[in-house]
Length: 160
Image (cartoon, rainbow, N blue to C red; front, side):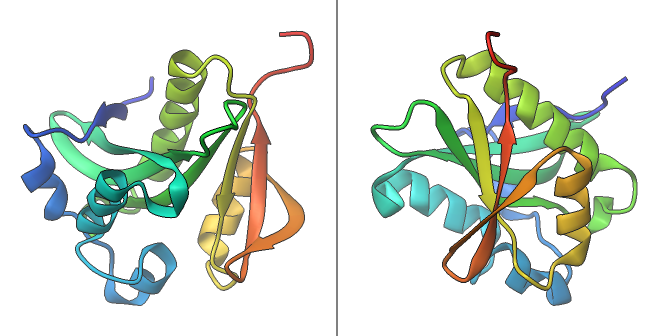
């Protein structure tokens, strides 16, 4: 059973989201600045890169254990981008990463039925994330975005 649930970051939980972090050696893989939640919320507020941003928290037994952002290009209803995906350093090593990613994929399928693909970039030296994404059926496209390889997941089978 998946213990991780996906919750929008709202006025009720944004302060708790600000407390989440990664180990110092992981920071460069997730965001250029800390707290990461502040980056995610800022991008949502200003519509960074001309996209619509949706900030989410991952919750286990009432506790926020991680964060991520989905972003949509205005004219691309078939594609969502995943940014700043991480599990808080206090909760790492418990299987929450794969569970959170699976929960988010299910969230996208349920709440964005027109979405056909989930894309992301990963720091070229973040081997743990590359293994996770590959294990979760993301495939490298051969493209790069801001110097990072692009991975893509097909969300629906043909004809679904």
